Length: 119
Image (cartoon, rainbow, N blue to C red; front, side, top):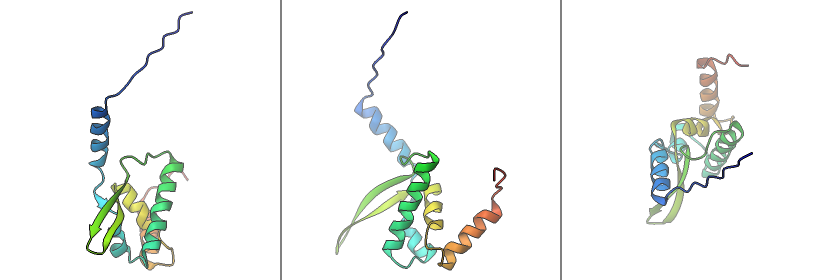
């Protein structure tokens, strides 16, 4: 019996290229959901992002290409935001507080317009 061990190394240039390619799908900012969904606070937004990430994680969806933490500088200081894929942005929007009428409406709209044949 023969055993072959093949060691593969990727170059930092290739890794950087793959990362940049994944970032092309990050077209929205999480902070946009604050206005669109009328979130009450940044805490609600942060909790929504956390829930959206958990949904992706437990569904086997990669964080790369869906979520990227970015930092923004303002005259008041530095804050962070998230660049999101369209999927991640929709998840953030529906993971808000369900007592928020915009969140509740988005969830109902999503369910009414999707074919949930696997349930």
